[in-house]
Image (cartoon, rainbow, N blue to C red):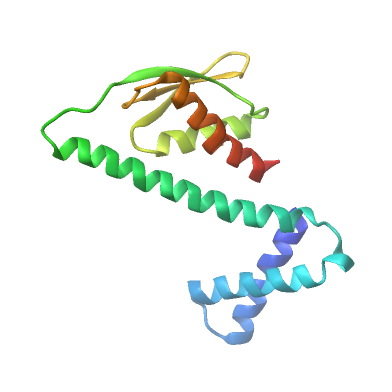
Length: 158
């Protein structure tokens, strides 16, 4: 999978060299064209895993952007309105992640989202402690983390 990703980037660079325009838009065009070339020749090159991961990565990107925007709006609304809607709390979330990289990425993505902060990981790396500003139902919050960001992140990484 790494080789195909590298080949896709090299094809994008070749596209830039062929067109003579060094712009972000041209690079993205090159990546898309390179992806299509690799997809057409996947039977010759092998490794179909790359073609399953890219759509999942793109889906995860848009999911995270949506969650980021919603969280920003929620916190901004709470700040500009006179009533305080915050119900802070700390929740222990059992992890399905296995490696340090998976745990670190998950914790950082949670921390990047306004209103949540990853506090600590248990010594056995099975539980992540998260502080949230809006804790109405701890079980619902756990399910949102498990079935939302953690599940989608693991689909991309595994």
